[in-house]
Length: 84
Image (cartoon, rainbow, N blue to C red; front, side, top):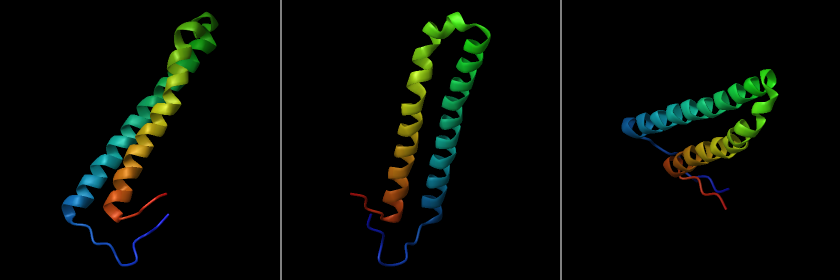
């Protein structure tokens, strides 16, 4: 990872934009985690639902990773961080 060699200055607008994107990421990740918890609770009380809910359970971790990666890319871009 290459970080900037000099101080980085962000405008108020850039900070607001990053903050909005961070807020969106937190909201979306929490939604994905809520689906995992809800599906797990449903399966706990009604084990025969595993067939219907397994797709939801399996899909959520990659969606969480995608949300984090999307924000990370914006963060790196704003701060001039270069990753291999």
